[in-house]
Image (cartoon, rainbow, N blue to C red; front, side, top):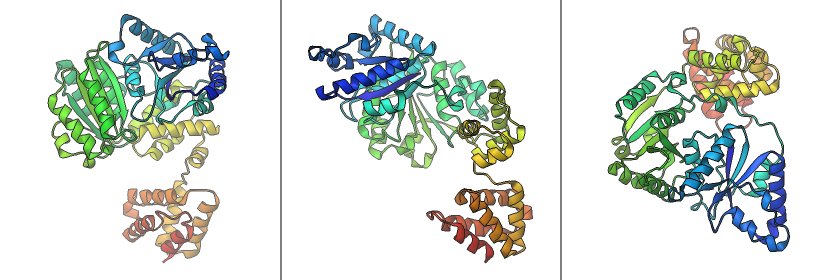
Amino acid sequence: MITIASIREVKPTEYDEVWAIVRNLKNGNYKVVSELAPSQSLYSWFYQTKQAGNWNQEMFDTVYVPRFIDEFTKAGKDRLKELRALDKAGKNIALFCYCTDEKMCHRSIIAGILQGMGCNVNIENDYSFYYKIFLQKHGKVRKNTMSLANKYRPTKFEDVCTQEVCTTILNNQIANNSYSHALLFAGSAGSGKTTCARIFANKIDGEIIELDCASHNGVADIKEIVENARVKPLLHEYKVIILDECHTLTPQAWASMLIVLEENLPNSIFVFCTTDTQKIPDTIISRVTRFNFLPIIESDMIKRVQYICKTENIDISDESIEIIAKSAKGNLRQALTNLDKCISYGNLSPDAVRKVLNIVTVDLLKELRTACMDRNTNRIIELIEGVYNNGYELHQFVRQFLDFCVYDVTKTDMKLIETLLTILQDIRYDDSPKNIIIARLIV
């Protein structure tokens, strides 16, 4: 795993502290790598401390990364290959990128290059992420673990759940060399949009450049991406620019993007990923090929979780897997995150899974529905008090009760469903909603 983080210029008063952090990283089996910037690299900064008597040239490993495309000499390519080999060998790598402010950081460029080469890359999103935070998160020796969602992220279309229409079209376009220069992947969270964008990029020999638009949504961010897109890649046939959560871009940023979409750059492909297409300008939607990603079907999610559990030798019942799948509501990433959470709890029985995921039993929901329809005030109060005293989150409980009633609508009074919808509105911003819930249900 390669963890990329920003650095600022180190002040002389900070040298001792930074050396201690670098030693901690190296003692934790990290290779410490610097971005190649001749006058600004971490290596060159610390070279200036030699006269201070605390210089240790061996503290930094010799591998470093070219920053821009025009620096991709043969030596630069060899260093990238060396870095990839270290990653494939399971080494932990701390890669520091020079950063003066939010407008001057090269992590997204470097991350895209490394991801395009098949490296496992973790990008720290905060531009103010400097040495102290890096030490707190990564400086201690710890087990090198990866979440199940990342470990089992599909690397081929055949492993993507539920999206047969989208993956079939993409495969056919790739086979016929007829794909668009701009694609829009629209769908709910955890449905496979970014995953399919990466698979698509790898299948067409693309260098991946990924931008999190939620935190980089301004004109300057898009202009940097556009300038990068105009440069022909040297290691791959295409540059595939993935703009995640693109609906968060500002109107001015979209205007800058519109210009480059009209140019139809021959060696760059843009993939826009979004959970909210209504916020994307019509001028953009009319210039892209749209793919609608469905929420993951529950049966597909159960099969995927079963496969992962079998591969990981996890002893878990089908009932527990079904509870985990239903709790995710079409979001496979959330299902695997929930599975990780349950594994950490140490008990994968159905009751334990419900407890960890804050899910009440179906029997309790049935009993509450009966009490509400029979106007049994005392039983309603007793059941809600029990849910509260057992530590269940009441907002989530009301949503579960509503889902249960809607799912079994033939046995539910429509007035109860209307009441639950009203309750959800009433308790939306209430931190202690127990009394409101009871009052509404007993009226």
